[in-house]
Length: 108
Image 1 (cartoon, rainbow, N blue to C red):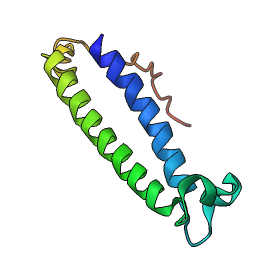
Image 2: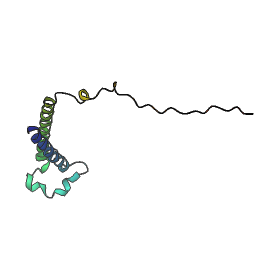
Image 3: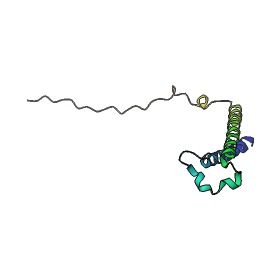
């Protein structure tokens, strides 16, 4: 139950993190040009300070959630997939059918 909730949170964090990174101003402007007049929403300095802090916070939450998910999955898995494999030493390999040969006839 809790791993399912954390997995849903992980997906939401990924989507928000991608959007936050794409909205930031870069050398080629990125998608920040399509967001309208950000200055009036985020203050006089523009979105750079707010988006940088938001990206850092979301990235930190993403890493904490990833570590938590990894810990929870490692605790729930007591055996490895390799441990459950059937040993291949007892399985007989398929044998190719024997080729039929005809005796060579001497040439005259």
